[in-house]
Image (spheres, rainbow, N blue to C red):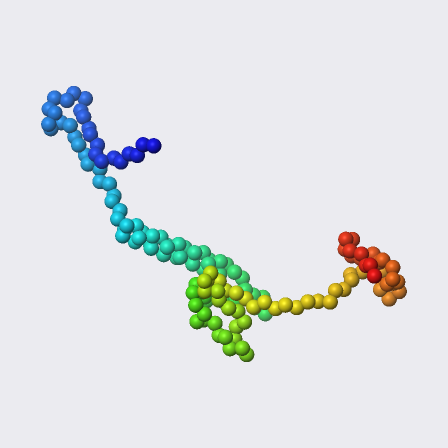
Length: 150
């Protein structure tokens, strides 16, 4: 692997008579970055990424259509952005507060989880009258992969 770094440029005329004055030497001005310069660039890039992502969210919010009761597009004034570094924005009042939490390590909002179940019901083929059907036999069910066995 060859690493090249241009430092200067030599120019020679076709017929070189004066070797002191006629060769032209042009120094190349190379940029020299210190770690401080790189850190400042990194911070500027992070700010640029944040501004760009917020601009994209603003465009998404502006194009989002929220309808009122009359079917008209509601006026939107903005949106809220949070980095989820702490729990200071959550109202933990059990009566009127939020039922979510914040994972400050991964900086994510965690929603409340409700566990509930429904009683299983058979969906019988609509061609069968449920009032006169014999429940001891296998009925045709809506899902062909299911069978009633009892």
